[in-house]
Length: 184
Ligand code: FES
Image 1 (spheres, helix red, strand yellow):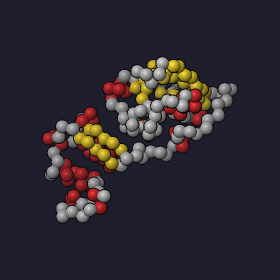
Image 2 (tube, rainbow, N blue to C red):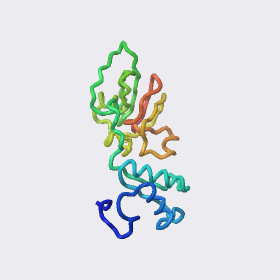
Image 3 (cartoon, helix red, strand yellow):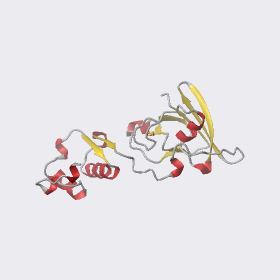
Image 4 (cartoon, rainbow, N blue to C red):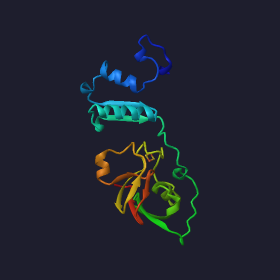
């Protein structure tokens, strides 16, 4: 681990923190001279770097990153595989989705607050996903009817959001009927 390696220069020893980052950007690295940034590390560190670069005027589209973990596995209702019992007499969202040319439909109890991905997986186990943490973008789909709210997004760019794409592993319906398309 490089963060445990002792270097001669204290600035290059140990973990990068806010102070070290400011020093690095003030000396060795000049944000204006860099075309593109590639960040890789744990959530907090990557977030710190993104925020700091943004404060220094770096455009978000010039910062690419990969997280070791999403750092947010804290909502049990968002986990895949949790059994959800659907009682049609109670209030439900109706989720319709298109995948590989086939239309699927599933009722999701409003109180379950399950993600669109988890609801869809109950009726179609082949719905694509990988990280389930808003990082990889595998579960991307386009909202074509209704509205959703998204928890975390580390994968979609602003232009995709503007076109209506969402990460279904992070999206929860906010309208009674929601339709998403995985094929577009
Ligand atoms: S499965 Fe990775 S972002 Fe949704």
